[in-house]
Image (cartoon, rainbow, N blue to C red; front, side, top):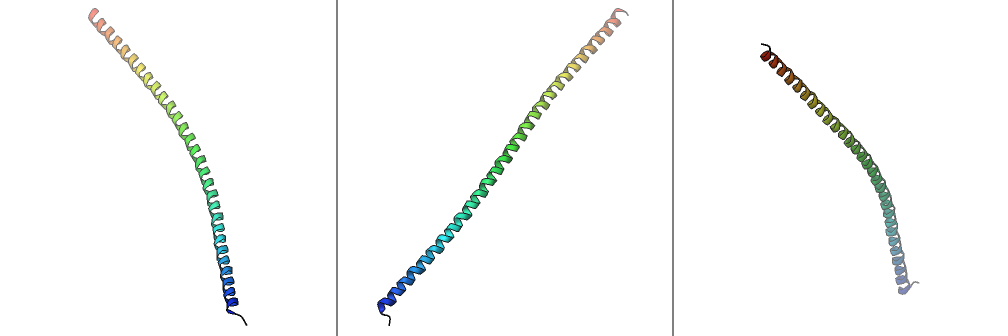
Length: 109
């Protein structure tokens, strides 16, 4: 027949075993969470790398657009100066022609 001490010892043993099982279950859950966190970190690193690549491509495109804009601006400046030169030349030619016409009219009248 079991004594009270044997029953108490059995209860203590059961408590210890159940406590160990609970601790093992918690450690397993923690280990699973760590694995999930590591996978998430790896995915985040890949996303960051993709974003960095995308940013580099955008930067390259913006720089290309900036260079093309500078070329267009330079071309427009050249076109404006050419137009000013042509208009200035035309005004001078027209003025000289008008002056000659006035002089002919006045002198040879």
